[in-house]
Figure 1 (cartoon, rainbow, N blue to C red):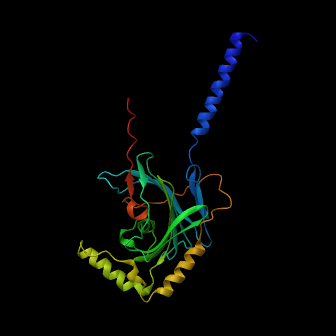
Figure 2 (cartoon, rainbow, N blue to C red):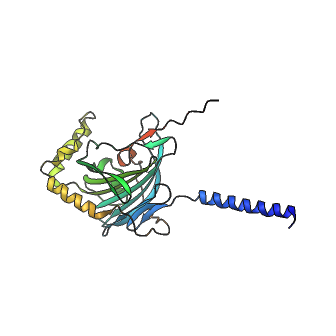
Length: 276
């Protein structure tokens, strides 16, 4: 083989290897919903299973503005899946899952080291290879994006939910949230109505303290928590689908409240330039 021909062959092989490396390096992360679960591949990979009779009702991707520790916060992706066990009437069981990603290098999700003010309980544990923060809390439907999603698609919701929320931060810029909901039990309805009325009439009204909702409701909360644990499998899906499911649904006219649904962001100072 001549010298020039060897150069051409070597150049072709080098370009082919470079193209292959670029192709592998640019393969997009796969995120999506299965009939009984939600998953993402690549960095921060995870999957959660949602047990029957709950099944997928809606999934989609959008952007949301994230509250932060500086005046102008970032936007984050908001990939969601929504599950229920009924197809008409009022929604009485609901699970949603969220995969949200901030711009890398400049932003990270705040750690959830303390319970939210409205939380009835707070714990942390490992499951499915992830470290989860778990909270039980009330949710007011009137200001909730997922309740609006149901309503704009012809379903009614309770005025107040009780939610069990699992959240994890597999990478500093990635947050995963899974939340199981049912209508808030009757034993806490009066207090929820009073707190919501106070908030509507006085913007400076004290924040509802979730632990106050436990009075006379311990058994209801424990039974709710057991049903939530039975509905969500943090150990993941046995097999990922070949491609994400896509379902067409109407969406609320307003954006998700990223601070409430996902969390707050922190600005990360870029590394200083090396001295010359």
